[in-house]
Image (cartoon, rainbow, N blue to C red; front, side, top):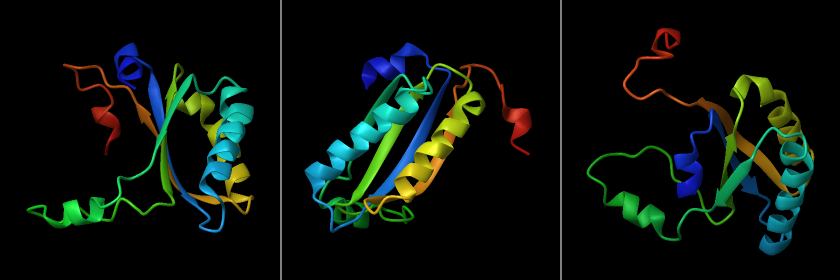
Length: 132
């Protein structure tokens, strides 16, 4: 992950997934890895992906925060994927839409959130004019 962050990718795509609780965790992880390989990696949309789950007990930790941190990070069935991409995210977004449709059409999981992120140029206000 640290090497990916230092690489200087043009963009990222973040995907939040909720696994069907009736599906075995190791079977799900094998399935989602194969699906990712056969879609966004095969098409060349992504070069690398990091996937993780919330730490057990994180709700207890965030409950001690000095302010409301918003929604819960999710339970044991929540996964987050962070895809690193070499292209402008707009150029490959259709590949991620197809990936999301494949996940949602299965009985194994549902996409909760997916969003592209553009790399910033440190020390500039690039993209700031597009926020409003």
